[in-house]
Structures are given as C-alpha cells and as structure tokens.
Image 1 (spheres, one colour):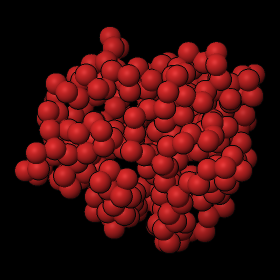
Image 2 (tube, one colour; image 1 turned 90 degrees about the vertical axis):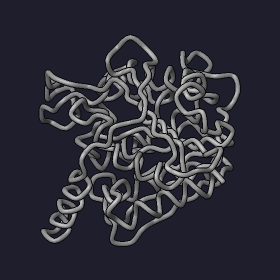
Image 3 (cartoon, helix red, strand yellow; image 1 turned 60 degrees about the horizontal axis):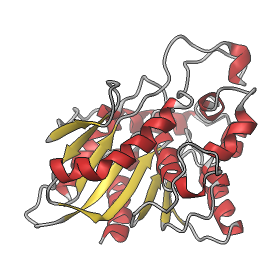
Length: 297
C-alpha cells in the first residue's frame, strides 16, 4: 500500500491533469456509425507547410467514465508544439457493473472495455485515418506518423502497432506493418500478466478480455507483451512514482521485447506519477512531447 504522502501526491497530480478545460478540435470526422466512432483533429499551431502527425489514444482503463475529452489539453499541447494531431475515440465498457465473481478481484466493478468492440474500433480508426487526415488536416505529413497513448490508451497504441504480428486468425491482423515512425506509450498497461498480479486499475485487463473464462485464450490477440517483435521503433515513458500503472509493468514489457530480440526505449522519470505525462502544466508532459519529436522528426 502506498504511504499517505505518495497517495496525496498522486491525488494532486490527477487533480492538476483534470483541471484543464477541454479544448475543442478544429474538425471531427466519423469512422463508423456508433457515436463513439469519431476522431477529433487539431491543426498544428505553427506556420510550417507540413507537420508530423501524432495519433492519440486516451486512457481511462477502457471504461466509459473516461472519454477523449480529458486528453484534449494534451492534444492541444502537441498542436502548439507543431504537430498535427488526431485524437481517437473508441467504444469502452460501461454499466451495469460486472459481478464480483467475474472480475477476478472479489468485488463488483464497472466494466472495462468491450470485447471485441474496443479492438474493432481502434483497428477501424487506424484504417480510416489516412483518408480522414487528408481531408481534415491538409498540412499533416502522414509519412511522419507517431502513435501515442496514455495508460489503457498506451496499451492500445502498442497493440495497434503490432497488428501485423497478431495470430493469423485475428480479424484485426494486417499483412504489413503500419506505416509509422514509431510508438510512444505513456505509462501503458503493456503486460497483462504483470498488470493482473498488481491489480492494475482493478484488474481492468482481465475485464477487457471478458473475465477469467476468456483471459488466457484471448491474451495472444490483445497483450502487447505477447506481440513482439514488431519491428517498429517504440519508446515507453514511465513515472517511477506511478501508483496506477506501476513501473514494473513497463519493465516487464521492455524485458519481453528484449527476449524477442527487439530494443524498446524505456524512459523512467523520477518523482513522477501517472498523470503528469499528459498534463500540460507538468514538466513530464514536455518530456513525452520530446520523445514523440525524436521519432517524428
């Protein structure tokens, strides 16, 4: 259990990250018929003729309580640093709570994610993105695309970049790697085995896959730690003081990559918790943006 000072700092960090008002996009486009199947676009706030494209996947433990609006200040932060930004929404889990016997935690909890809908949406969004970007962000240079995401969105970013190594019968599999400069995963839920042992977000990864009855059979289709190597440049940015998604999860993913013969960059930030990575008021947010820039330019 974290001590009182660590818990207080984490609470203050979360309050700061959520204190910024949502930033309206410059354009919004649908990639499907469901209300959650939309992408918000932010044009670069600079005069450069072309700008790298950053695709953002928000976190929130894949639960409906958290939608894309909480990460719009981060999207705007990136746009002000010269990036074109696509902020992706997707279907998440909601009420009613799943029964305690199905959570793996012994307590009822809001449903985390929808199987297979959450994955359907992320795959569909990425497939539709090139055409949507051409229409909504004419100054975006799709040849310099970086995929990023925070927490559960970090998981989805890693997963989306690994679709070409999914099992052959996976409906989301692609024949070729995504045309990405790289992935920057911010405090991602990147290893479902370790996340389960640490009860990350109320064992949300177990719920995402449909509970104990389906967890092991679905892990090869969903767990980034099992989808390696990808051949795509990947950096994980992680706060050492993160109580929501502890450092051990990021380290487990990096270790899995190394065992698969791939080097994953791991940037560990001292005295940083979960939310400063997407908080424009925090120094850690600038570090996240710089890691994106390192891949994009």
